[in-house]
Image (cartoon, rainbow, N blue to C red):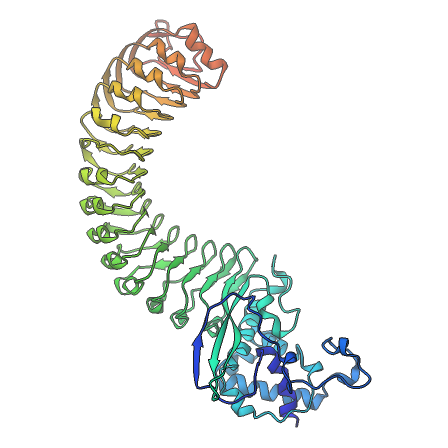
Length: 561
């Protein structure tokens, strides 16, 4: 049987550049996938020259003549040889080739037949030497991609139309695939190279079903990006074997199960994003501590339970930490204060308890802090307001209490959400130091006293102080907020007339003042606001003897009700 002749088929698959002597040393060389490697056709001795009846310009076209196709015996020999290679090198297990329509079998058949018809030629190749050579790698990677294609309903993909169409030697040209050059040094100290897959980005391709374990054959893969698909099943248990991985993005799929323990072996990992799946289980200390190079960790919108691991503080390079919308319990570990590079932390919509660690004030690069919708207690640490670059603080829907600290100058803070807690005391005059504030929400607390007039010096878009115990007259200075769109003052103990300066709020969309002790008549100038943007205007204008006389209010209530 023509073992040597048939096996030339796989030389093109793996882009052999030289003859087969065993390699001494392998060098990992990353470069762009457009690195111009010589193809087998360019090398002397790898393919015979065209015959006398075949013009040169047709030498590399795919023949279709019946006499160029392999015989049945040659196909059987080719399959036996390929099976020997795949099983001997543990590329597949016997069960992977069972069933005529299994992904492994379909991939095997595709590798077997893709170029066999045009490559039945004379060659005295030492098959055993080739099998032991590092060039076996590109063949296994082609098999991995083929198994992925057939295992995730590739013919029905929304993208990737050129997959499995251009011959086994074109894997680096597939949509969503980027390659790099891997070089080896042979016995003559000559460096030769071949392509391996570096990036798989199949975002929104329409992948369906579980990920095949043959992905583990992509030993040099650095970026695995399968976002926005319909991938089911669990994350591969042995994913830790892919130790070159720097990026894993499997977000917005239908993954189930727990985080495999082998993930901790991925010490080169820079970004891990698994959000919006159906993952469960805990985030263990042992798992996290191995990610020493991690910069972004996104596990939000899953079903994780347990506590936030103390070892999170060991991830010194971490910049983005997203654990929100899970079922995490317990305290926020004080070790989070060690994450000096952290820029964005989101732990909202969990079941966290205890106090906000004062150590978080050490996060000098923190811009975003979301801790809302938990069960946090205690007072608001003044240290949080020592972070000069802070831009957003969202602490609403907790059980925080006590008075607010004095605010230093924070030139970047634009959002401060403290609503639905148990804060007491007054709004400090130092709030004027928050000069960049756009949104101030303090509703549904137990604040009292007068509203500080300095609020009129902050260019707010929304001011919500409703459902508190504020009293006294409304500050006329609020009329200076020319960009104000939402003003909610309802359910307090404000008294006196509504300042005429409020007629200057030309961008106002909603103004609610009901359930107070306000009196007087709404002026025509203020009513003119309803001819513009104002579509919700509520006061205590109901009843036979209303406290507010208003001809333009969209809804009237009675303070006594």
